[in-house]
Amino acid sequence: MESSAGSNSDSMIPDVDRKTSTSAQPDDDVVLSVHNLTTVFRTDRETIYAVDGIDFDVRRGETVGIVGESGSGKSVTARSIMGLIDAPGEILPASSIRFNNDELTDYSDDEYRAIRGDGIGMVFQDPQQSLNPVYTIGNQIREALAVNQNIRGEEARRQAIELLEAVAIPDPARRLSEYPHEFSGGMRQRAVIAMMLACDPEFLICDEPTTALDVTIQAQILDLLSEIQQKRDLSILFITHDMGVIAQIADRVNVVYAGEIVEQAPVERLFQSPQHPYTRGLLDAIPGRRSGDDGLRTIEGDVPTPNAPASNCRFAPRCPKAFDECEAVPPQHVSVDDNSTHTAACLLYPAEMEESPRVAKHRRRAETEADANTGEYHE
Ligand SMILES: Nc1ncnc2c1ncn2[C@@H]1O[C@H](COP(=O)(O)OP(=O)(O)OP(=O)(O)O)[C@@H](O)[C@H]1O
Ligand code: NI
Image (cartoon, rainbow, N blue to C red; front, side):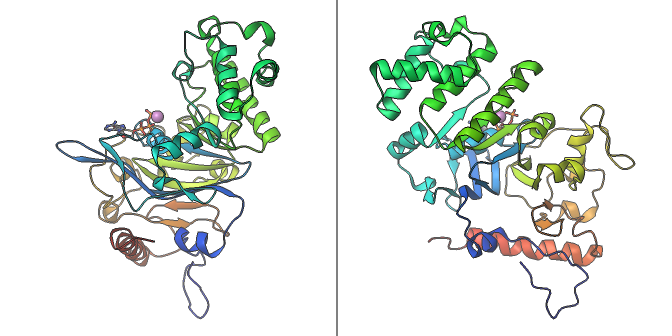
């Protein structure tokens, strides 16, 4: 953070530099800390920057949302954290993913398998991906209990029934002996959540878990997740393209565009006072909601597939507020509130600065960032 002491800066709003702010005030509540995560896919012709230098934290017991259009890098972020990026994908060396202060990017395959078992659970859009069609639901939950908690026999059966009760599956004793195809879509997703709970994780990654479900079932699953979270003090990273779902489930939100976070805010702040033109566009696209005079009605165009580190604002070609410099300077996160809980990466901010010093400030910070990330970056 810049000190304003002794300077007559026209901006009362300090920059936010996460690198110094996280190390200056260690936060015991932070369970997951992602810093400068950059995940690329190398093809014969090009290198795709699917995730390009993102930073965020998740604290104990909170739900952090990641929202953005298709192709913006949400699932690649989830898979990077879970250690599920395979060739031609690669997490670049300057990336850091700390889980309870362990650096996951240094983990071996075995260590990752262990943490996927009982540290971090994952719920995907398609429950079939997590269920085996040839075993009964009961078998699969008991297997999870045996592998992860060494619970077997009658005790495993008792706990499996309890878990199905916990996810509100009626008549659980009978349901245990049924196969996945005998469950409806919503019930299958509940069974996956029960299986995940059998591993007793402290962190849960949900990648569009309700997207395939109709809205009533979706709301039930979201309620269920909130309830389980409170009971177990779970931390959740929740990925969706749906701002309505974000409003229901998230405490804090990261808005992503083409591999980058463009805005970060507590959920109420984001909906009351969105700052980045992209976020405003996403919110204006919600039926019945309109931010008034200068909002866009729909966002024209598609998310680009980045094939180089950002050298400008990737949203500029679709942005109604873009000016010349947006094509030339990669915007940096600056605080857009009084206490740095809300940031936006956009050359329009800090709004109270004149355009030319404002752009110069972003340019300077971009150069510093680039030096830090390409220079010697070993511990
Ligand atoms: N195995 C891969 N090989 C090459 N490119 C990939 C691979 N996996 C993902 N990508 C690219 O990474 C980018 C981000 O993909 P990702 O699946 O994370 O998007 P998403 O935000 O989850 O979108 P959706 O909402 O459609 O799920 C896309 O441009 C995609 O083409
Ligand atoms: Ni996805």
